[in-house]
Length: 469
Image (cartoon, rainbow, N blue to C red; front, side, top):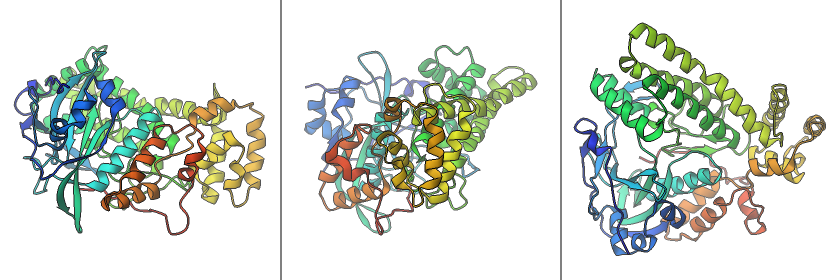
């Protein structure tokens, strides 16, 4: 059994990018879950990770040789307001590992104790958000969405004080990197063009090796975000807190705080307890992405060359997002309808279905999955408008196999996650493992998991989600 071998390219960027911060040991760590397929992907020894030394690393009680724990610095616009310094307030990046194919991945501990960026916080996580992020991020991966992933979850044997005393936990998060739009903002608002250039070069080398400079970098990030957000929309996913510090320049979905998936469909759906104005509602996510990317463009102007020309070209690049997004949206929703090559006129067909669904608050996931099984009409209290739409849809000769690959049978429904959390707080992790197993195969029709496909019954609805800090 062997410990991971770490490299630390981000730590080599030097002072200003991070604070060297070891994780704070916990009292009595215990492994809840180890993601063995992910460990294999990373070239890590799952037997070592699940043993005493591995659990000690995953809990923050031991730092393996070669790791250089750091808390990354970044700023961010939170609900539109700029906060000049945020940073990793409850996480440390142990370092990076090189997978067998040469791909580089960050290994980060979330809930690992206070850092210089904690802003009077305790730096800890309680069990609920750890289980939520594990389940949702792994579902997103299984559904084909670019995302950070969960390598492990451990309990700490300690309590965390929030509204009450709750069991503590640590999540081991894996990402292709943790560089955010807010990372660029951190240096831009300080007028630090040298570190901006250094950061841009780092991101190009790590994620966009074909980019020839900051302008190409911006173009590549815009294109990736258009694809990612279109995938969110096609799953009924609501990120919940699309601040610039929660947008990864890799294009991966990051920071599953108050996230949720819609049950009954309405475009203005919001779950996050802190999003009182609906800034990050489902329908607003593409517009917020453009806003965030405009902040990135502003940060990169100082390293783009002649300012007036740079502003004009960067503006054009950001303004290309809506067209890129709409193309990706049509392709994703077209696939949900079984249309392999959707035409622009199919947009009206898709939007008609969404309008019928919104009028009756029909279940987002079950209606689209019902197009595969032939049971969609049963999701409407008045099925006649749907049946009228379906006649036009069938005239397009949809491919049921394509629709089956685009429409999951199961999603991480809010009430199911809450049941998992409630059981976990009581020491029972069987519901977590069952749901995690089912979500790893989201498109497979499996009778033993039929109950996990059901929407919440009366009294089971979870209408508000929380960030967990």
